[in-house]
Every structure is written in C-alpha cells, then in structure tokens.
Amino acid sequence: MNRYASKPLRNSYGAGCLELRAGVFWLVFLLTTYFPGVSNGLLHAGELPPQYAFEEILIDAATAEEPFATQYSSEAALDYLEAGARAWSQDKQCISCHTNGSYALVRPMLSASLGSSPEWLRAFLMEELEAYEAKQPEGLRKDIVPTQLAYLAAGLASWDRFHHQTISAETDRALRLMFKAQSEDGSFLNEDCWPPLESSHYQSATVAALAVALAPAWSKDLMPGDPVTAKLDRLIQFLKNTPAPHDYARVWLLWVDAWMPEWGLVETNQDWVQPLWDLQNSDGGWSMRSFADPEKWGDGSRADRLRSETSRQRQASDGHMTG
Image 1 (cartoon, rainbow, N blue to C red):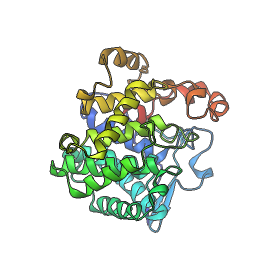
Image 2: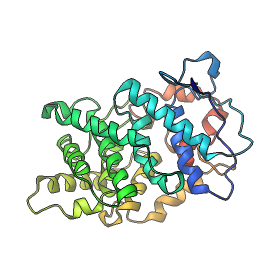
Image 3: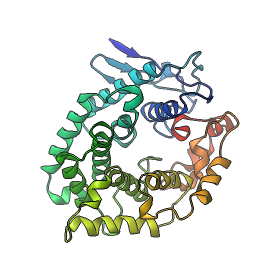
C-alpha cells in the first residue's frame, strides 16, 4: 500500500527554487485542504478519515499541527500531489475545483522543473471531455458543470502550452464546449458555499478566462462570424465591468492579466499588486483568510465558523496563497 501520511512539506520561504516551491505549495494546499476544512487545527489527522483513498493509495487528512520539514523535497511533494489527484480522479470520476481541476491546470506549468505531466491525467481529461460532449445542451448549464468545464478546458490548454506549444483539436473542443455553458451575463455558474474555489460565478469566470489566455493563438484565430467570438467578448466585458468581490478574486484576475494583458482587465497593475504585498506575513508567506472578510466568502454561510477560529489559524501562512 502506498500510504501518504500527512507529510510535512512546509519550510521557510527562503531564496532558491522559490517559483518551484510556490507552485508545489499551491498544489499541496489544494490537495490537502478544502477551505475551511480539515486543516484548521481543530482535529488531528488520527481523528479524521483519510483525505483521499483509492485502492493502494491512502492519504491522511492534513492539519495545522503538522511539524515543519527538516529539508525541502520537491520529489516528495510531487509524489504526494500526484497520488492525491489520481486517487480523487479514479474514486470520484469527476473534475473537482480543489483537487484534480487545479492539478490539471498547474501541473503542466511545472513540467520544466518536475518533468512531463503523467499521461493518465490527459487520458482522464479526455474521458471527461467525451462524457460532457454527450450531454444535452441544457445539462451543461446546471449546477457546477460550467465550472467543471472551465477547469477541463484550462487543464487541456495548459497541457498544450507547456508540453507541445500548439493547440490541439481536443483543446479546441473543450474551449468551445465551455462556452456552451456560459451564462447570459458572461459568467459561469458555480456553487456559493465552498470557498474559495466553489464560491462565486466570478471565480469561475476567471478560470474560464485563464483557459483562453493559456491558448492565445486559439482566440486570435477565431474566424469572423464564429459565435464563440461574441461569447468571449461577453466574458471579457463581465470581468471588466464586475467589481472583484475581494482581494482573492483580484489575485485570479491578475493571473489572467499576466497571460493576456491585451484584454486590459487590470488598468494599473501596481494599484492591485501593492495591497497584496501589504498582506504578506512576517515569515514571507500569505494567509488565504486575509484576502476576504468572512462574510464575503461565497454566500457568507461560513462566516461564523471562520470567526470562531483562533488568531493562529486565521493568520498562519498557507501554501495556496503563497503559491
């Protein structure tokens, strides 16, 4: 049995391999924590069911009580991440924002440092694409499906960009399918009760925009009269005209702007960037909870639980925001 206990992967945020560490930390957080879930220090790993389990893979739940690693290991982090993503994919057979969806988006970006993404990941995305293509159009606009399609398209676009530097026919299919699920206002339907990733239509819209931004040639090569052109413009206008609900949303918009600055989503980067630096903790990291008031996460239903946390839980740096 491959048992991935809640291994201590955190370390100081010193110089050297910072970009790699940030990317790995971000993924580690996504696969071990579902805000404001189990890694809030309220329970120890031994008191919780496994975070992920499937066949030979067993990953203990993470907690804020974990000791620090004595030495950083990207190999250990990668093993941990890929086991969690694969366990979720094989067990749940669906795309989730906080697990394999985010893994599919970010893992190809780390290929220069960590090697190519595993082939099972693309095979899984292709299975999901074919399953969604078989759905009736009205089924694509229900529940969290639009958000899942945004992560699907983003994962395939990221794979193409960082592995082949060209757009595949499969990514074209995924992007077009994603826009079939778009809401009339340009956003993408999402849940509002599981922050940060399943918390608002705005959040899903930034993921959809990132999917397109990672495939710049695709949007630039759209033929005149292609119905997707109007849908893309609707998405851009939604993000331009809808105020970001909090600093966490601004981080995602800045990420989109970094890949596609010609959309003009952020007029003056520095006006947005400096407030984010002001939120940095003394250890060099950031805490996700600092990026929005408790009432502004999703529908606000988590506010009481968030306010009940200790100062240490609220202020501790985490891999998600630091990454």
